[in-house]
Length: 74
Image (cartoon, rainbow, N blue to C red; front, side, top):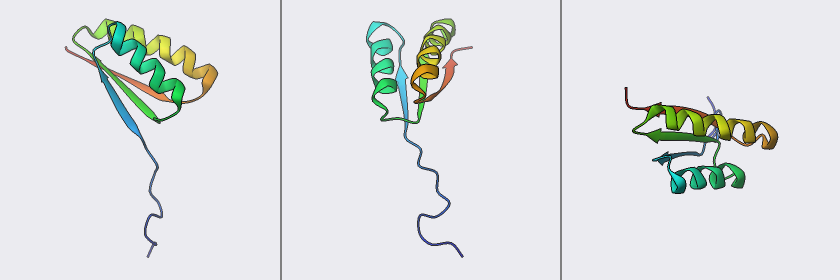
């Protein structure tokens, strides 16, 4: 039997809905702050969310802070 809290993964997730100017800046700030371990980007235009995720992934590779996922319509 395991004690309380053993075997749990400390995961802090955030989602940014909309990848326009404000959403992109918010996603970058969240990534850079280190407050989240997983960042999800949502946008009505999937290609916009994918482009932002790629830009964040490039930055994250240097900062080694978060993983990213891309979700969109379609």
